[in-house]
Amino acid sequence: MAKEKTFFDKLKAWPLLLPVVALILVMAVNIIYDAANGNNPFSFFTITLQNTTANGTVFYGRIIDILNRGSEAAILAIGMTLVVSSSAGTDISVGSVMSLAASVCCVTLAGYGVSSTTELAHPLVVGILAGIAIGCLCGAFNGFLVAHLKIQPMVATLILFTAARSIGLLVCNDLIVYVRNPQFGFFGSFFGPIPTPIIITAICVAVTAVVLSKTALGTYIQSVGINAKASRIAGLNSKTIIFMTYMLCGLFAGIAGIINGSRITSADSNNIGLYMELDAILAVALGGNSLGGGKFNLAGSIIGAYTIQAITTTLYALGVSSAQAPVYKAVIVIIIVAIQAPPVKVYFRKRNAAKAAVAKEA
Image (cartoon, rainbow, N blue to C red; front, side, top):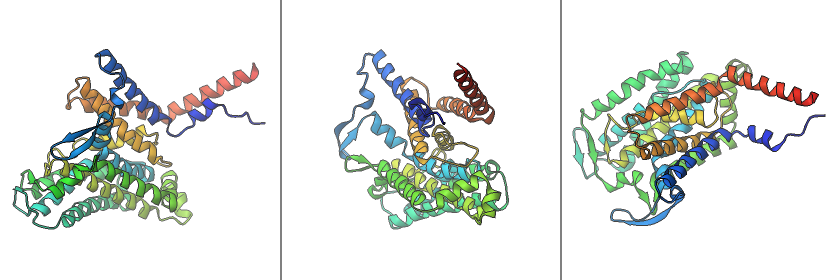
């Protein structure tokens, strides 16, 4: 007769255990830091309404700031989750694609050769669609290399990782193109008291979750990631599915790039999306998803993305510079990947089996 699982057995099997524990640890560090400095220990959780000159009454607080500033990483994490699941590889070009999408969007809205404007040369929807279209095109390029030419994902996406940002600079004539128009700035500002990026992220997550749960797409992606040959024998077109995930990744990179450009009402090709690929990959890993492909947990990736932003905010609060922060994130990636490594998993399985055998004999 099988032994009934205890609460701790169920807890260890919970898919969201790793991201939730990581988030709790970050919160605990903030509580300890605030208490040590004589501040309210729970100021991290405080949310207030404040009047601002530009946006009226808006929500304010560290959690709101994390949700706002982590929106781009959360959107990128959606596409990165699908890519990792289907191809067992990462798209390291998403940060550069963000920069290119923002550049194309701003140049379309400002007009070619214009470095600063308050009037839109083309309708807002045209500029937004242009940025999203270039993101999809970049994703399609990556997908073609990976799915049809069988190039390793990191090598295939390394091309646009290097080139997309440079193409953005060419589009902008090596200038920072300013679009100081309220319509464009809305996407990085506020919708009532709530930051608009939070709303856009919620829509992206909700639509993706509904599509994955109400259609067979999620099952197809996981099947291809687990065993592409078996999926092909079962009648699935693995090339098309992998291609689609990279195209979706490009789509979300384009959306994230437009949000980032809207925040600063400009296209700063050198800085938009810088190091964001690291945040997206780390979000997927921290979300409990295996970087070896297969099954994925979208909720875990979203929690992971906001945990990364919370870590970044905490590092800044602790006096770590923005130039040093990626080093700490890289260390976290190494630890998470090591924990998920097959030899480590085998070791812990054997150890648990040995403990169970000893307990049974006793």
